[in-house]
Length: 409
Ligand code: LLP
Image (tube, rainbow, N blue to C red; front, side, top):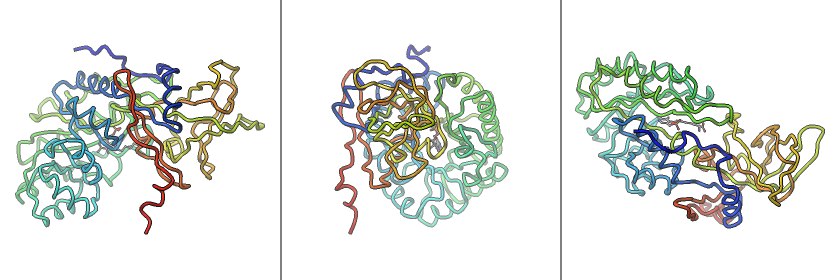
């Protein structure tokens, strides 16, 4: 089946008048999440992996609107914390549809998930975690996270496959499965995740290597595995010159590597499903001429969208001028309101000469955007508007100032 929707939604494809209208209605900074596009992305993935069970990596965007859309589309949930399990349950995911990927899980997390979602699949990456589950009397669905020793992604910071914090070394994973089986757990699967943001052919090769290592573990497994979970990490282009990920190539590589393994395939993408379905809208409040680029101060900063400051990540920026007229380009650096020099959203871009009151739209903000927002500098976290079927609604209120002090005693 071929999917009609474009492989990628670029920032230029968003309607300027729609974005202006949303900013006027809900204020800025504002995340806009297009749920129709989330569904299109799900359909693309389902078309490339027709036999796979798709579990949405909630960490990319845990907003209720997104969780609802993907649950209705047929996705399960991959949860990294008790908080994500809480949100998934709240959104109506059945425990049996939840994979809880427990990385050095706090006791409170284990206790919560065991109490509220004991039928979830516990994906564990350390023998200690298995011991701690056993101590709590758990003998349910267990999968072992394999540390493949191969990583990839948009930067080293997110190449989890090469970071030993995650998973049991691949040459010891079969042994861990044997021991878990002997101890009475319901051993159902294995898991690995190469990293986040695979885009290049080299990244796809790394993914293939990871899946080959999983296949090797599966062949040594003491029981028939119900599933092999090859993780997420499917990238999207952040720069105009980048090509979309060749999903079919990833699917082929995955299938080839698992050819002789008789288990269901699980994929757990986050970014791919939500990134290009979101934009961040921010308003220009300060324009400063310097000897270098024109500094453009906006009301969104690193507390709104952390990725540029944290990973040097590139996000496209598009100007929606106040008067709707185009202006000659300037070299512009977009900076936020936070008292940190790293509070830069975009550096040295060619943009129409900025004026106070202009809106800037920041692309690919749907993944790891609002989710990584913080209240540093006592900045209220932004609002989120959901767009769906030509309509829109407030999906998440902007924090109020009172929200900043509510937890204080
Ligand atoms: N599964 C596991 C076990 C993961 O650790 C992750 C992401 C995913 C799935 C989903 O990966 P995705 O399909 O979204 O690439 N904050 C970073 C990304 C960190 C991803 C961490 N793990 C960023 O903004 O680029």
